Image (cartoon, rainbow, N blue to C red; front, side, top):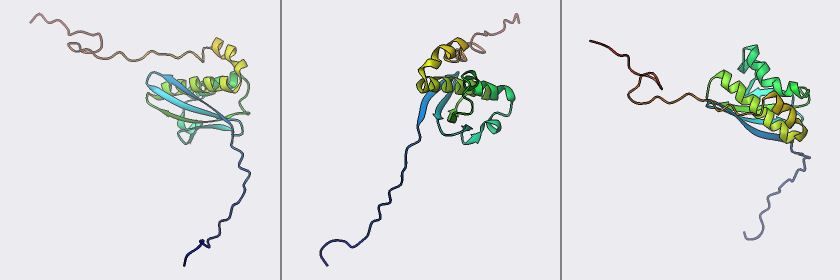
Length: 146
């Protein structure tokens, strides 16, 4: 049988308007957070867990929400975050940094207030590497007389 194939293809038109988001990267020590702020979502999801489930301590939760709270847009934006490296405290600060940078993409008027609050400054302090001939990075061997 030569000729055209007789398979029917259904073309369904779905009004799939892509959801708008603003993306940024935040860093602290060795923690790196990729943050996406969505205009139509609510709540913050970190590594596919809820904020309160991922950060059980209230101080870490407040640190993550600080930029949104400062700009008074807690209920207007939602975030999806992928974070890795570092400890939980450094991850919370990396997420705060990433959210702050994404908020500037959302609205450039926020930059001055976020800068003044100190949320845009990348805290670059890291653990110093251990050197050979030493116990730790700087601590030398203890002197012994005998």
